[in-house]
Length: 449
Image (tube, rainbow, N blue to C red; front, side, top):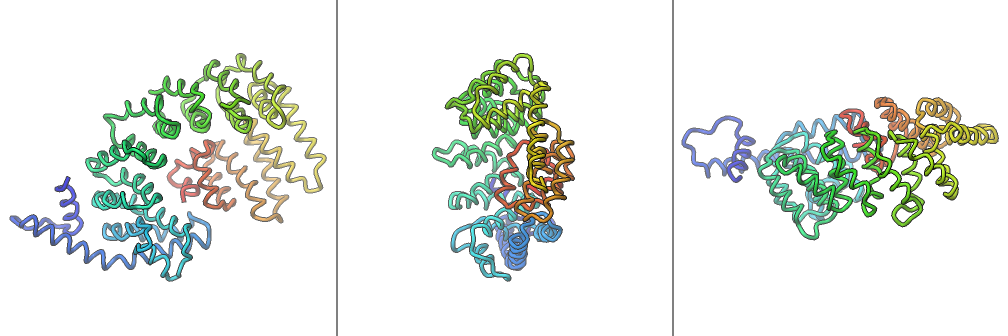
């Protein structure tokens, strides 16, 4: 491993072959001196670029603008020495050179957590694009002393830089470390599933069958991304686990939507039986019922139980049961729901756009994104004078409709119009309806940025 690190440094400092017979220690010393000199020359420009990029994002709130992308490209063009300078932004301690650059400007930035986290995010993305194994040793060396956000960013970045012979043992040690934070252990597992092919199958099985829910979710999302049905039996067993399944509704739904099959009635009846109990409180029931309606279901076996739920559940949860009943093919339930929406629209005030938007969102739940878009186009004409905050919900519903249709370019445009704050964009990254958009290399930037 030491030899790999030495060679990577030599390759960085000396593109040409060293002279034959040159002493290795002398070469290493020359490499170190050359690296430090180039780092000293490039670091100020790299830090200035990062300050400019963070300032732009704080001012505009738009992470995917052309100017932001231009600055990112310049960061990557700074090369391996620039990559070492970017590591300053993984150091979140008060004495950090990266934080000093953010505070000093120009322009001087507010000493805020948001500015720090944007810089950490942008540094991680630039380092990923550099894909330099020479960055692996300093990242590993700095892990223990790093603050939690930088530790998470390090674990996420390491598998993307190369040098698996260094990264895999490090990730194994972190995954097995007692007391490691949940999110960090999940990142370690994510990296191991990506890199450690010989142990991947066994590790997936353990995560799905016996690990806590947050690790089972990592395994599920790996299978989803790989469109891998090899662990179908373990996933079905996970779906019957009352301790873990209720907190994995989104991931299980996305798994079944990605790897479509007609779900078995016993598992579904088990889920429906949990509604209203401690296992699945009433506040989670609408999410379950609406999501189930988008999957291939054994309608004949489920319909009696869903009909009973529509009678027994309290308002407004009973409405979600009626939506599922309609999605199982009950035309009367569908007509009742749409009649109620039409009546609310008739009784609405003159502009009527709030009732029209409510009908659009119902149509989305009824798996009719085309009709929902027709209503949303009218909504966005009617509420043009409303505040951007009010219109945000309309653009978000429009983006969801386009995403469900697979029109990812239009979904991305609608999300741009929504101007979502960073925390709301972050929530959408785990929303199954936007999973395909998030995975797209270009259109997904609207959520990743």
